Structures are given as structure tokens and as C-alpha cells.
Image (cartoon, rainbow, N blue to C red; front, side, top):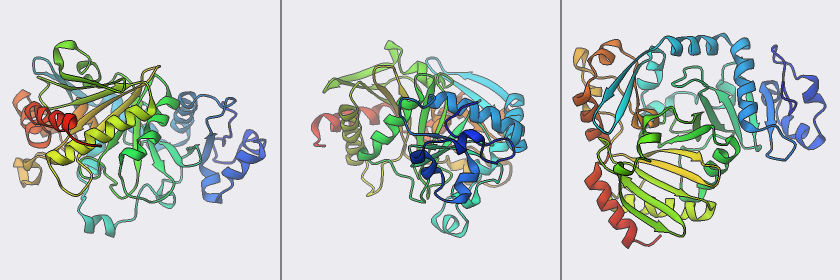
Length: 365
């Protein structure tokens, strides 16, 4: 059991929590509702257990103490899975009825205003415990997982989902703290975030997504660039356009990301954050960002009625190659052409990303 400040299965602070040094104990005590939920505190100092180890301990504890989480993981283990191959790409279609709340969420501004934020502390399930991460985020287990060990990283304050380039350092540090075995993801507020009003990330074991492997294959790379020691390339032949940024320095990687965001905005100006999904992994010596620029959130068939409706709401996981279908009819009907049709509707294609790369080369930061 980690000794970085825990609670027991009943939710009471453990003796380890009571023995925390004053600095950490003071942080924990910021509100009794938070203190009651704390499994551990991660400050990033040398004596802390690793974040991945703490997260594994949180999952193990919550699987015993939170029935809804155990049920969610049992449902995931029993979920149907089919692989669809498109030459250079693979998509794993997952039949996951527990994701219907997220896939079917109404995300228009009025609906968001009318409902209480389910990521704010008062609305979290009473059994849900958390790791307090660097005093800013809460790391919690997702009770409707897409992957084994699915985590959600929630900002402690209610603020809009957004990832401006100057905030990328938060994501890079989070990925570095998790280490090689985890991938952190971000869904833009208009293309996959089921809580666009509350800043959050997701995390899962690295290597589960087909795209993580596909973007590294030499035959799938095109238009490779190098700037400040950071490699940037787009993919080709993967059914949707993907951009990859890889480098060792946090500041150069952040600047490259800023140039990509600026290029996307120049390619399709909207006055808002460019639509994208993102995966971030620490490679041991640096970071790899996998970006999926988007043109829309949901396919046109999502808004149809009756049997013509396609309840697919692509976020980062779907773009990365795990396509979530909460309705069995959609799971059974999905084939290569339907997958490509979804990608064509919601993602930028290879030609569009070639234009973005041109803007990247010519534009100012």
C-alpha cells in the first residue's frame, strides 16, 4: 500500500495519511470533502512513489471498494471486439454499452449550462477516491472504461476544456510523471470531450491503440520536418490525417505544438481552439505527441432518427483506432467502408495536412 497519504477501504484517512509531513497534510486538508476522497498525494518530490505505481494502487483499491468501477471493468472484459483492416491501418471496434452516456451526451451550450458538472468535486460519486496530483489535478478511475486501467485527470477548479500552447507543459509533465508505460490523451471541447466545461485529460496503458504503432512505421510517414531538434511529420495512407511531434526538450516541443496549432488555425480559421484530439507519451528521453486534427465532431448519421442513426461520437480513442459503439446494431454493421466514411467526415485527410504543413513552414508562431 502506498504511503504517500492514503485512505482505507471505508474512505477514512489511513494512519499513513495522518503521518504525512505538514506541507502535504496541509494540502490535503483543503476542504473536508477533498480530504475524505484522498487515496494519495503526488507532489513529484524524490521520496514519492511513482505516479504509475500510485495509480495502480488506486485502481486496485477502488476495484474492491467501489462496485460501479468493478462492474465497469467486468463489462469491459466482456465487451465485444472486432478488428477491421484497411491496408496500412487497423481499427478495433468495441461494443461497449456502458459508454452510451458519453456517446449520447448533449453538448450544446444550453444543455451544458443546464446540467451540474459531473467532474466537479461535489458531483463525483461518493465512493470515488483520488490522487491529488501536484495540488492542481485529481486523478480518478473512470467507471465506464474504454481501456483497462482507464484514468481521468480532472482539474480541481471548474474551467473550460482548452489546451493553448502555453498550457502544453502541464500535459508534458503529466506524461513524464506517469513514465513509459502510460499514454495521456486530450479531447478538444468540440470534438470528444463529454465535459467541455471542465478541464480534464485521460490516461491509459501505452500501446493499446493501433495508431501508436502505425505512426512510427516508415512507410506511413510523409513531409518530415526538423526544427530546434524536434521532428514533425504527417502520416499517409491511414484513413485520416495524423500529425506527429517528437522531441526531447519541453520548450522546443511546446513551440512546435504552438506552430502546429497556428497552422491549423490559418488553414481553417474559426476564432476558437482548432478541433483536435491528442495523445502524449514520454519516450524516456522526450515526448511524442500524436495529433488528430478534426473537421467536425460527429458524423452526419449521428443526428438521424430510428434505425438510420449511427451512435458513434468520435473522441481520441476512436481516432486512435478503438472505435466505440454502445449500440450492438452499429457494432455488427461496422465495416471498412463505414470506418473510412466516419474518418472522412470528422477528420482532416492527408491532402489537408499537407496544406497545414505548408502553413507550418511559412507561418510565424
